[in-house]
Length: 470
Image (cartoon, rainbow, N blue to C red; front, side):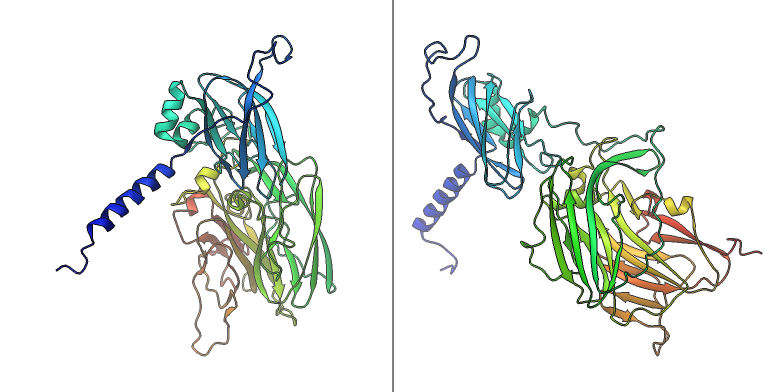
């Protein structure tokens, strides 16, 4: 007898369980509205002439990046009260195609009256990035074709009727010849901050930025630049960050310092527009660290520009070199000109960024080579902010004789005289590399993942006059 043969009752029980599970997974909810004072005519209910009576109340819960239920069905068209119950930890709204909306902070319940036509009504959360992250839904009427489609296709039907989500993401963003010129990011590493306690103000900005020649995006930043300011301290220092989210901004933000030892639900919590908070941490470990916004969806906040570098030196400091620079590799997933970056592109299982850049702007150090002196010692602090692709940091024409990567160290005086040609960095990893240029010339700065070099991950060091023939 086959040892794996099951009794007939077990097979029947399993089939029944699977059928029940499939039935339970449908995405369309047939909603019996919560009754209001009645469902009579407007005159019977004392409703002003010309205004339809409210037929009932529909409850929709918002969670972090979703609605529950996302698809609802009512028995007849007409006017309904939509009650938004925010079970999430950040603000959400529910917005309808005519602009009607209810806005609820975490833990709040807000309502709005809407007219649901026979063809049904779509809704989204209009806070930037939230609809792209999945906050979309559909109310259909039982007797309409829309209801039949929703019952058959679930959430796909809801998305097909969504006409209030703003510009659709595109995979073919055309360069604008009239776009403002980009603002170069100074790659010179800052000096280490004096003292042992550092008060630092980070003000979140939501603004437009030219990220490559001809391409403008609406970005979110720490301070005026992407990446945010480089913070340089030493082991044992205390850093006190004053994070401010101005009331003129649209969305909550937060900050997460990888160089800190604090609970996620302590200093890293989000603050709404108009709020501020203090995030204090002590530098316990040396290295090159990332900081970034962690507000949901964190992928969108990082991809939209909210990241920066922290350098923590050993308590005794780093050896003196002639010049120091910082390079933060990151990706842009272009949305429409002047709009937010595309969360859909960034969230793809096989990421394909439109641009991969150093210090926020494509090819800026190719256009304006970084000047160094031949034979002098150079140190570069390197961070891969991602959010998705790896970096293989390489400088053509030289060898790294010193590498400190995530706590592992290659030193100049190693017995075998080993060197390094590239430093591999996954998203959120950092390194320190040191090198010299043997002769006058130009030395390309690249990621050796060469499919990204042509997308902006290219710069130049110019040693001396740049001409090796002189």
